[in-house]
Every structure is written in structure tokens, then in C-alpha cells.
Amino acid sequence: MPCLDDLSKARLDRRAALGLAAVAAFLAARRAAVAQGAGATGFPSQMVRLIVPFSAGSMTDILARSLAEKLRERWRQQVIVENRPGIAGTGGVARSAPDGLTLMLTSNGHTVIRSVNREVTFDPVKDFTAIAKVASMPSIMVAPAEGDIKTLNDLIAAAKAKPGQLNYGSAGLGSSTGIAAELFRHVTGTRMQLVPYRGMPESQTSVLRGDSVFCFTFFNVGGDLIQAGRLRALAVTGASRMRQLPDVPTFREAGLADFDYDAWFGVMAPAGLPAALTRQIAADIAASLGDADIRTRFAEQGVDLVTTTPAAFTAEIAADAERYGPLVRQAAGG
Image (cartoon, rainbow, N blue to C red; front, side):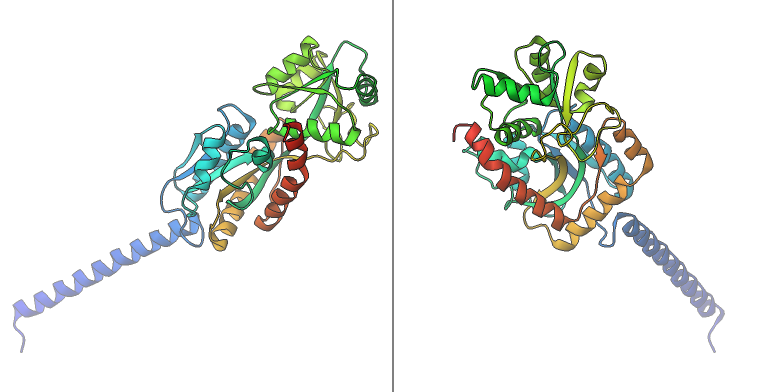
């Protein structure tokens, strides 16, 4: 028969085993909970960088920081926004590992980057994985508040009466507003002189001074000047009028039905991101943008938060590159 010491030892061993089993069960449950919060694959297991190839304070930057905050809560991981303006930022993303830990939030100007700069070594379509379009913004064509140009037809008539003599401003050929301006010139068959500026505020100032006959802007940049009567809004892009500017017609209403333009913002990753991970990140972005607080905040700025599938966003990027690339290339003298 076993002695008393042997029985005590057996009881202790059983208690120890039960204790270890309980700890193991707790850890497994905790890991499952973390995985549930970070997605079915447990992604991300470490910090994610969200690259913005624009300066701090830009619309792209504002969107990125709001999205990063939401993803941080959903993934239970750090999501750090890094501002790396220009080709250096975009090129760095193209060269990064396709593991989902390096993402980029950019604008539709991304699609024409090789048309603006021939020295770009990456392809804006082939060297990136399109994950999700996240926002769309109506563009607003503005002219000087004082002057003879009071309607869209007035502007077109003035440009055709003085071919090549009128100036127009933009935030550069590769910007969202720059693409809008080139598309407008192409659709109307007008010739005007481009004066590129560092950003939308500077191009607006050129219109305020009367140095430019028009430029395109966004409501969060030029809305106050329009509502104060310092800039005249001629038309807005999109299928319907803006809630903030109910008296400003769409381009179709103003008589230019062929002008169809969408300034968008979206999230991309390096080429080769696994399809399952691409779909998961897209779904997490869509869920994050569905929160009422973020939608209300951006709606007040004239920003429509949208969600698309990776396939739909891929198709849109390719279509925009094909449509706008030649226009921008021609304007750049290429």
C-alpha cells in the first residue's frame, strides 16, 4: 500500500496539473480574444505604418489620422501615420514588404504620377495592391468674386475669346485639383496657361488677386471664402449639389454634361499582398468608416466616406491612369 507521503505527493501533482491546465486555458482564451479583435488571421501582430505622401495638415493626412485612430481601436495595435511627401514616400511603400504592416493613404493624383515625372521608377498600378477607396470629395470650380465671369459658360466663352491668354491655377499637375483642371480644358477645348502652386490655398489666393481666372478647390479649403462672398463658385463635380452650397449647380446642371470627375482617396499596399489579407484589411477599413462619429465629422467638411472592394478599387485606379495620364502628360509637355 502507498504510504502517506506518496498520497500527499500525488495530490500535489494533480493540483499542479490542474493549475497549469487552467493557466493554459486562460492564455488560449486571451489569444482567441485578441485574434477576434484583430481579424480572423490575428493580423496585425505588431505596429502598422500608414504612409501619407503629403504634408501634415493636408486632406489626405487628416483622413489618414482619423482612419488610423479607428484601426488602432479595432486591431488593438499601434497604427502610426508617417508623412513622407512626394515620390520618396510613394516609392518607399512600393519597395516595402507586402505583409500589411506598411500601408499608404493617397489621392487619385497617384494614378498620373508617371505622367508628371518621367524619372519615377515604379508603376502606380502594377507595383501596388489596391485595398479600399475610403473617401470621395466634390471639387469646386471657383472664379474671382468681382469680374465678368459669373457662370461656367462665361468662363468658357472668355477662354475661347482669348486662347492661350488666360491663366488658371492649380496645386500642380499631379494633384486632384490639377487633374480636374486639365480634364476641364480637354472637355471644353479651351487653351489657357497653367500656373502651378504649392497647394490649394496658394492657387485660391491667385484667384482672389485676379492673377488666375479659375482654380479647383475643396469645401474644407475654400468653403469659408465662398460663403463669405470672396470667391465665386461656378460649379461642383458630382451627381448632385453639395448640401453646404445648395445654390451652386453641378457641372451637368451648368451645361457641361461631359465633365465627369471624382476626386478620391484610398488605401494601398505594396504589390503582392496576399488576397486574404487584402480582403481582411478592406473589411476592417469599411467597418471603421461605418462609425457614425467619423462619418458625421467628415460630412461637415464636404467629404463622403465610401467603401469599395479591392477588385473595384483596382479597376478604378487602372481606369483613371488610362483616362487622365495622357491629359496630364500633354499638359506637362510630354
